Image 1 (tube, rainbow, N blue to C red):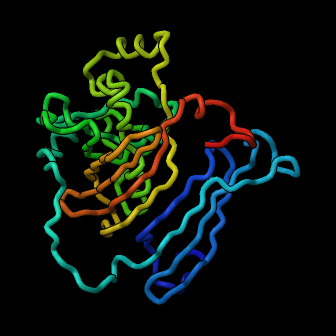
Image 2 (image 1 turned 45 degrees about the vertical axis):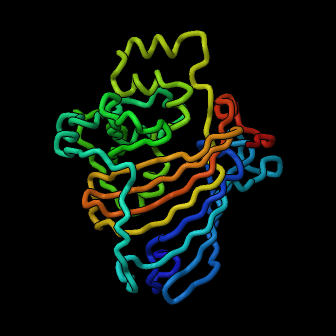
Image 3 (image 1 turned 60 degrees about the horizontal axis):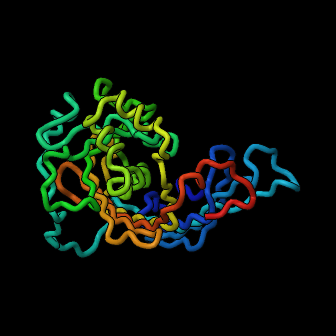
Length: 298
């Protein structure tokens, strides 16, 4: 909006709806943006992400562009919003465990949380190398807390500074919220493959994890493609960004190869920053490692 409509005053996405039609791949992509409605307070845009059917070949008559993702974005100005506001007294439930962010930043852990050192299946989730996740320590997790809930404090670490010995240079702004609500340990893995996540939290040694991943049994059994993602932005973060955000991810039902995720993002002042809802599939991991062709479908 700031480039195409310089005279307008709706610089911030307040709602996003995305439908993922096909698997995307690393390489050339084209974004097509269409004005749906330009209003005085709220404007609506339609966006399409397209890629060549055969990513490794030059585009041409036999390698047509195809649409991979379709979305609608609602734009407004979070800095000048006005209207009725009411205190709903909403809080995360179950309650969030206390945190010492200074200790997390300097030591990689505190009483309740510890750094997730590395993603055990990074070949599927390279973007996770650009974030520090601090998860609840297994021995601090309340006994009645189901596996379907994941809590994490996160810092933005562009360039792969995932270790606690190198303070990350990134800061969270509203532009990064779409990334925040899509990067977390996969909840299904806590049921079907808990060993790998335990190793990522330091419960098993690096050598034990390598031996586990090299064993004959296939470990990365599943891939979790998103069908639909919705994002609702509640608050404008400061222009310089913030260092920490808290993210809670919760699944209500995992059934017949489909599952839902509810995501909440909070800041250090206990204000709700954004909410998100995902509808996803559980499919064989081979679907995400085979070469992409024109017949690739979810």
